[in-house]
Image 1 (tube, rainbow, N blue to C red):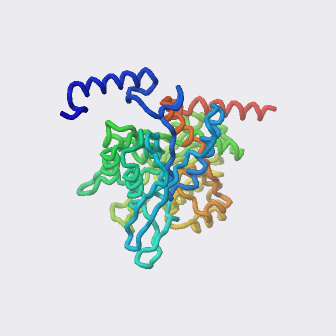
Image 2 (cartoon, helix red, strand yellow):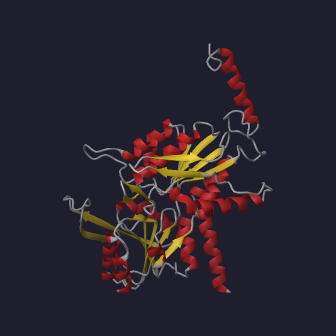
Length: 406
């Protein structure tokens, strides 16, 4: 009889689990790589090609965090490489051992700057191939890591999270694939619909947001957040919860635009027929438009025109992901015409140089936040305070008010 299946083996596993809980292992059993009373396992980060820039920043922040605890100096990045064959197939190779480590795989499935040669033609790596690389990395680990967590800031296939008629359920299937491959948890930001976590109810799914960091950037830019001068506007009903939170935490009025769309599909999109506004008077007031992402940018510019017609002054658009799938030339024209004041977006997905150079674009750096999430998980500490940033935002606003009085 196999030692893990026989009664003696089962009793031994129960004993090991009890010992693990006593050592602070949260009941996961004995860990041969226990570093100290605060660390569950030796930390390792696999930053895939799509996430090299963000991964390097996260690594530097982690080194700073751990240096304060007397942790041995050195990078947490695991040396890894990606190989693409001429027919489009590929592989991930790890160049050092990950045995017994607490591994975090970082991937940006929205990074379209990665390219390879396919039958002699330069081809961009798409979301499907980036997700395949995540699975390749898990395969390269071959079950030797103590724990494997996937950090995917822009959740793969998150826009195909529900079914209307005979459609695929891409995001749910992808999450279940990761679960079957032994992934302990998936870390993401501002999922298009957080209810997608129901696809993997027995696997960790942490959905964070960038609210505090975006508000911190607004304060840094000197944007007035006075109730008489600013209104939070939701671009559609789907973003209403987000807008209400911004309004409550900042003490601002909230408005809503209802987007009436045509059911006739054009270029994969349902065109907007008209906007219907509901909310306070906008004349002479600035606007914070808050949403999870900008795709092409056409919708948000159409919204800005409606806001201007209602007398709005400066319009600030705050999103977690700015994709700009059709480039930024049309946004530049809108800025030059005085339609928008600024667009704020995080670096949780690829930002092309052309976007970084735009005077209307403001990058919100999230590397320190990602590093903090990884650090806490590796220490088996709660992430609760990171889900509700209300206290941090109020403290930030009080400090700013105190500086203003001086």
